[in-house]
Image (cartoon, rainbow, N blue to C red; front, side, top):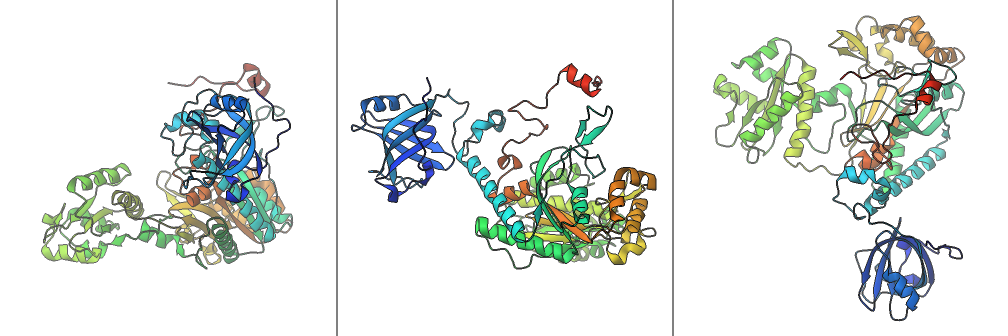
Length: 594
């Protein structure tokens, strides 16, 4: 039968005891990590969220207490009272390793069955099993530390924005469904049959309305929801550090974002970030890295070979150039010794898997370089290519050609990261980078139309407004992303507050006045009553914590995550509901086609 904690009150957490506490009485609660029976000595490692302390039972221990200690097993929940003393054999591997508690009273608060896996750091048990028993998985010290660090990070966040005059406002979780780029999670309304709420993809419209309301500076650790396929850095529900500021332009928002990141990294990790974070315009980022979220912890930038090879005898290069396309490469310095033909063939399959037509290559091991196309080039043409590529003996040059420039750049951007993994290129530290001046529109090849690259409230650059109707490709936005080590950490923009410009923008995006009024009428109406210029951003808290801790996936920094198929193994959700619940909502389930 379980015992009570009546009359016992914790004096400290397990991980807090040090040598200076010797001689003090202690009361601790926790879980048994392990019990070691040495005959006349029993040692118990007791664990709570702060760490482990050793409980000692010896010849001086009351016999009843000693015999109770003998029955302890892994994950039993116990309370212990005793005196802190210096250990005769110290353990330098744990912070409490200089002391132990000589137990005088022991209570077994709850027994435990043998857990399905050992509660240890870096547990080798398959993640699927650990997620099924997530409440046990979270007891492991490494995951516990991650969640405690997340708490510390959110504390610093709230303190920083409070100090800088931001007001924390809660926005609704049940909102109107509006187009924001991803698929909404819909919630049926019982009181309004056939009508639905949506879970917010972001608090975008509400934070803009808060600026119209005059709050001036808003912040929220906002829960957001997107019904999209999962990846290592994506979950269907996530937390966003959402902020908005009135009477600002781009420079003001970026300055606040930089100050926040410097403060956070210094206070949490004692890492000093640069006084000013580097910036790249979107087009420059794509030209150099093939990505709008480049990992700048290593070089290997994209090189343009078009001028060097446009007139060469290799038809793939010549036809790409003549078709208005481009020929670009990555030069892997010193990679020829470790990158075999077989490895290059694997990279060829990799780029084909992401839509490229193929991969040309030069591997310079011997005095004369070997290549997949050398027989089509003269000696001078090959030398011109190598010179343009900055290649030397020992290097590997990987080349992609296409008539569509975007395809070449994005292929090489993905290949650059794959190469870094294959070559074990060191990537250490925290490289933050602003990406600015995004295109306002992007060409959609399927529909053969220009579509919005951002939400429709993003303001175009002042000098680009004149091109909205005549040259969409020349319109750039007051939009910016913050990238950390190749991960998009934050995204934001200055918003449109001029009702005429907003209507013009809706028209440019193909929305009629009726459609715009139906979807966003409440916002357009608000702007008629005096909207201050404003802008802001949303910073992904989960991704930020993941990067700061060096975690492999978001699942390592979220207490109860979903898995790849968007289920939660622990509670087995989503799940079917009763027929009566569907009747109350006026909903029927259609049979699924096989």
